[in-house]
Amino acid sequence: MDLTYTEEEEAFRAGLRDWLDVALPELPPRPPPDDWPARRARDSAWQRALHDAGYADVHWDASPTRRLIFLEETEKAGAPYVGANFVGLLHAGPTVAAEGTREQRERWLPPILRGDEIWCQGFSEPDAGSDLASLRTRAVRDGDSYVVTGAKIWTSHAEVADWCELLVRTDPEAPRHRGISWLAMPMDAPGVTVRPLRTLAGSAEFAEVFLDEVRVPVANRVGEENDGWRVTMVTLSFERGTAFAGEVVACRRTLAALARTARENGRWDDAVLRRRLGRLNAEFGALWRLTQWNVSEAEATGGVPGTGGSVFKLRYSHARQELYDTAAEVLGPDALDLSHEWTLDRLSSLSYTIAAGTSQIQRNIVAERILGLPKER
Image (cartoon, rainbow, N blue to C red; front, top):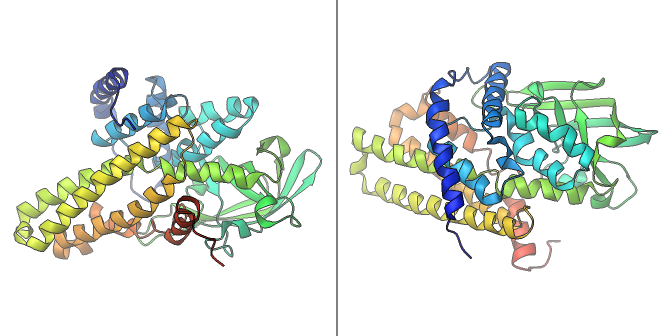
């Protein structure tokens, strides 16, 4: 497998670097972490700048390799991450691009790419735990609409979202995985109630969402009725396979900053700490190669990442936690300062072994689908 870049891809990289050198100095300061309306406005403005410069289409119309270059270079330059746009750009949008009708692609993809509309994810439920297929939110067909009733939890950026990628049960009598449908629900529909949830760091980037007889047009269903589990697997393959690519670059940048800080504050003299930093450097180097492998596989199979994304997600989740545990060692007493970026990142890293599928679920996927082991009982 060829993991090198072509001459055309390197030209794309050079042009992107030149544009970032001009665009980034014009970017306004980042708002406070808990001011999500202001953060949405900034994230959307950055997405519009990317769109106007011709870079927004890297998420769907470009090759997976070009998408990887884009993520690598924007992270290296310190450009904003997708922020409030991440659900739409990294998995709802790609799912619509892969599974939606022509009309659906024309309706939803351009506003996402321009930063005009923000999406959230309505998958997890209060009583479902890690067993996503046990979801109980009901959607009853009534003419040209579904009437949806239920509740979702850990819905990222629901308080500022325009649309929700929503999993519902459309056939309660069917086997669990076969009675599910994937809907695009407008967040301003009557009957939608959003209740923000506070994280350890004090921010409210998640929310509970309550649905009381919300009417969603049948035309907003992506895929066939009761085929939502298959569509969901496409969504999750993007979420686990390539959505974290930019974060690997960010972690490698943090690792280099940790080494510099350790040299400055004297903690570099600790041989055990130096070994941990060296091992993490090798770990994230390997994760970057695994990311390239996943992207190459996606490119060879039509753009949708495969089960190798679960291998990546499993190891990355734990490596990120180890990175910020090491950051706490480097910072010493300053690791308790909540105003320090690394302290906040350490708190957020605790969620990575749960978000986008728990580590236990990823181990099951690797065991069953890659190693061929029997299903657990």
